[in-house]
Image 1 (cartoon, rainbow, N blue to C red):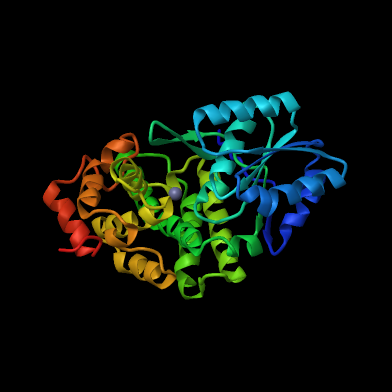
Image 2: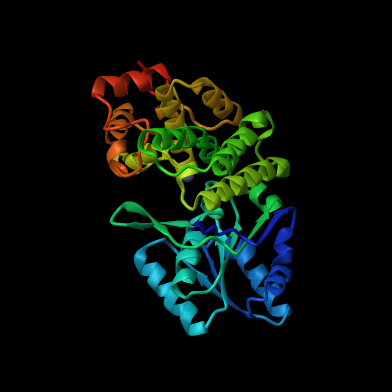
Length: 348
Ligand SMILES: [Zn+2]
């Protein structure tokens, strides 16, 4: 049996924030809404949405969250249960969405994802990242029942976030190659349609890399559409496989090693340049697209030491050992150095 979970309503465009009450009505998921947001976003969008819901006869309670920790998930779950919330809204760039995703699952009610930035594909996926003891862990939660992506608002978020989101999608090129490899070497189940969607979402970014510029609503639209397609690829696969391979393991390793990690999408994209070199593919195509967008392509641009890059390359295969990738049983230090130097990630 194959069980696929998709969002039912996906709204992408200018001022779609105003459509929140319409979406709630259309989904017929009740009038009590628990809104999870951050301290900046509450003024940018949170209160406005609360007012709209209340004007339409609904009940909306706001929770301003600080960090995505297990304690915070527990607190929000309990508050949502006390309200007897019919649904959760997660409004923010990632943390609030992850918190709403997990807490709504605990309460067994649906959640709606309202991204204020397009920095990674968590805005559409069923997985949530939670931090504890300085480590980030990924949990299976639930896919959003609706995604409301206001491209006007997203284009006003810092451009670095949008560029990172594009990097997260571009890294699908190597995730898909790793998946194909695993299907050949280990007979892992493989979905051609899911892989094609993941590949296509990466193509959407590279083909329009020269159009992705700060402050443009059209750029936000390209990024969001590709993130939604990437999320759909994961829904079809029933796992993150089409959008998470060795380059993601490299990024997770960096999160643990680096004194000051860069953004998830930035690290995955730089990882993808190096993993594409390992696959013998066109790593320069990935690098050029990132250069065009203005996303980092080197350790220095990410604010990470060369030694930390090498250490992360050496440790990456241990992060998720059950996920077979081009890293196999690991690299030797000299191989890791060569890969990073040839692809210009570190200086020779
Ligand atoms: Zn990612």
